[in-house]
Image (cartoon, rainbow, N blue to C red; front, side):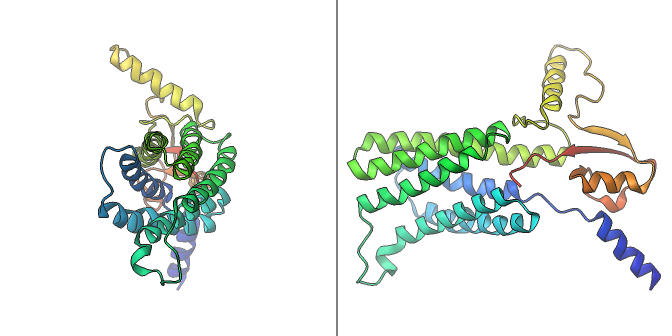
Length: 274
């Protein structure tokens, strides 16, 4: 009984949760890129986009939005849940002619213009929330809200050029979101700033990594500890590990239960939307 209680106490103290933000970023990026390619006139609309919008663009972002609610991230919860609902609503609108009652009119261009304008206004105010976050998040929203505005205008004036402009800008937005998701996934997994995102809380580490990367290209020795982009230390007592976990640090191996005294660990602060 005492062993079970001790095990439960250990799990409570050292349990670490995965970062769900990269999943939602990919869920946002994939359908955004495909839809933008179609709007830019590169490809025609395809049923594959509808399936991706429902399964990945909608579902994954809704799930992550719920997870970030319990994590206490208001911005991440609202943003991911909202854009997950956006992709589901787009999928429903595309399929509307086949499932809507006869009393419902088909979506008209002026009505769709108002639809995209509302999302543009929402994204514009979300953009203000990114001023103190990493630069990639800031640039993603900087490209997102004008994309919605251009799509809205294109449905009002019927101009193909405006629609293509919105498509190209949306493509940039989707690629930025994809990069951010990949950066968070790679950096957190390897414990090194391999893909810088301009995080204001981690500027010195990112600059140190870039300097060491340049030094390695020139055949020079990297600065001590800088190539990792993270803090490196030796665990001396359990409280050291507990302090790192409660501070939001990531103990590499992603197995806090395997950390023992005298083991060298790397700790890298999280820089996510959550």
